[in-house]
Image 1 (cartoon, rainbow, N blue to C red):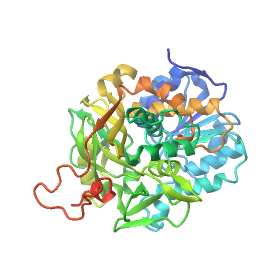
Image 2 (spheres, rainbow, N blue to C red):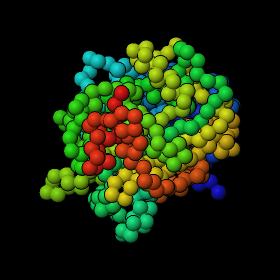
Image 3 (tube, rainbow, N blue to C red):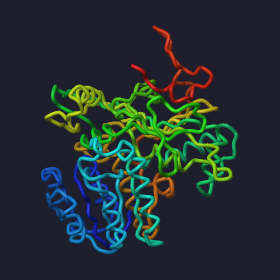
Image 4 (cartoon, rainbow, N blue to C red):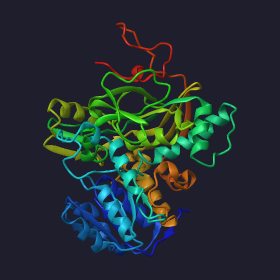
Length: 474
């Protein structure tokens, strides 16, 4: 029996791309409310995609949100006690959250998004184009927000979001497997000390999208299984990673931040040109992109152990993303064009004929490696929601649904991050939409199959878990 929740307020969804169109049927299934209480404001015309829901009462408006019409748009469609689900690109999450705090409106997004022309704007200092800086700016502003104000849950999609809950389940699994205390910690400090006691040094959000199509990418075309504009935007940001206390040295082009918690660093190069070695159970060893993601910073921060105010333990954390093969080719062409997006973009749905999206967390350290996550196939995705959806979109939309339900049950928590909410609540709602959720131990390390054809300089053979061992040098 699907968990349902009653909601007497209104919902404003901003954006109706690949995630929005997958979230809507989940809202219909799990929210006990008339669809006429839902409005979608969209910058692009997706009338055909949303038509069946408009017939059931959803209001649909094609109108880009810009700084000049933000407040008027939000106040027209929401009031105190209502909910905004921001699934857009190029609309400031920060500005919407500030408005929501003043007006008593609940808020959810999948990343802390700035206004347009930010990520690739070289007139903005490098450090300020990072997710670390966007998060720091938000955390600082939230210090002045009303105590017990309306709940705001940024960065709660698949990753960032769902993967934070995977980490907690993986830690408890590892504790049982290795004979450690497997009692669930009660607070942040307890979770951090559990991770420290297990000897976790590195965490990859290790995703290998193995979905394949019968209509391959053409020259001059960018294809992907989720938001192309979202992927390109984050791919143009500096590569970022939470920086562990076990690391011996900062990378040559790495930079530390001048503000905030100091839990992460960035590299002076785009994420879509930064490659790292990683592993998933079905896909096996992979060369993946180190794309910046919010969980790289918030996870490293959350699991830091302090003594006398100084960090004595912190894991290295980053995204290791191997998109579907059509997207890999799209990224290579995008790089060759000097980071100018191709003339045609094509989200992949109906043309997918096989494969899974293998999305999980790879914990590495003294125990070896342990991957835990979702192996949702395209066939299972279509059985769940129908032929219009792929595995990737459902993996993102189900934690959006869970986050929205959590907000309604916890409306007065102010700003919260995924690591701070009840992982069991989220997993109960998401699990039916994730296909097999599995954990698998491995003896893989980034030093395997190295020095095969030619010697590789710079490897640290004394500690496989140093970042420079993961990094691919071309």
